[in-house]
Amino acid sequence: MIIDTHVHYDDEVFDKDREEILSGLLSHGIGMVVDIGADINTSKKAVELSEKYPFLYAVIGVHPSETIGMKDSDIEFLYELATAKKYIASERDTLSEKEKNNKKILAIGEIGLDYHWAKDEAEKINQKKWFIKQIELAKKTDLPIVIHSRDAAEDTMRIVKDEKAYECGGVVHCYSYSPEQAKEYVKMGFFLGVGGVVTYKNGKKLKETVAQTDLSHIVLETDCPYLSPEPHRGKRNDSTNLRFVITEIASLKGVSEEEVIEVTAQNARRLYRMD
Image 1 (cartoon, rainbow, N blue to C red):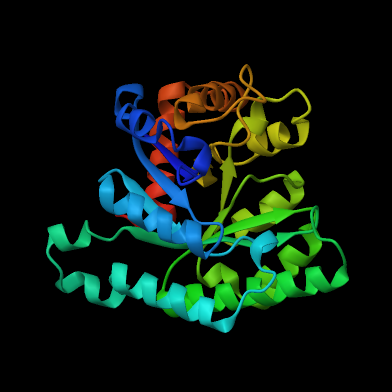
Image 2: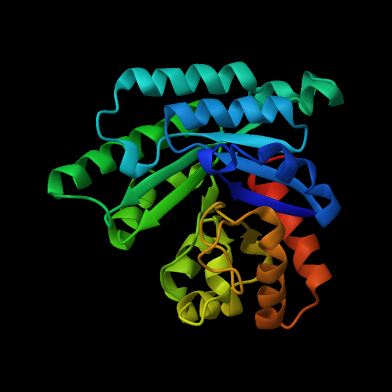
């Protein structure tokens, strides 16, 4: 069973054929997808989709580029949403298997820093503030985090270490930094999210990272509708395109595609604490 750990099927580009795509995933070997919120509205949509589709789970949070105008009341809303839809880990031993399987909100994300689009230093400072506050939220709700980091390698790493975000665990989504930094994240217990970029000719740094990283620390993701792999680069992405990512990872690691599917699925379940 293939698990797509990072999707945005809540996006309006899927409004015309969302049902068709989602209902057809199983026939392509996709057994589970995790819809990731980017702001309060899409976090709500992710939860709504998780309630409609048994194989779809939700992650709630505010993307760094969406933190302008964010308020403490938004953190309070996310807390209420998370605690209403999940069971605190300390209580899970007393629950039936059916109740355990009703946990549909898996993490806080995607949160982090994105300096690529930041207009000035004030916006970067604002992103840091809400990254820290959402790490605190993850600790409070006993959930892992999904980290978004673009052109902000040093500050992201510093905040992760200073705030002890490794206590939450989680994944560095769409990993794009050096193999050396990858080692640091893996050492802290984080997973690396690998998607379509690994198939690109100019994705040499990610290819190197994947080659040197033990498969036990890699999870599959599409970030759909974005980042379609070759040969569909530039077109709308969806989970069925993971087969191209799997082929590339298998080649880089010198293992079978079946092993990539099996191990990354196990990793995804560990990442999202589903076992």
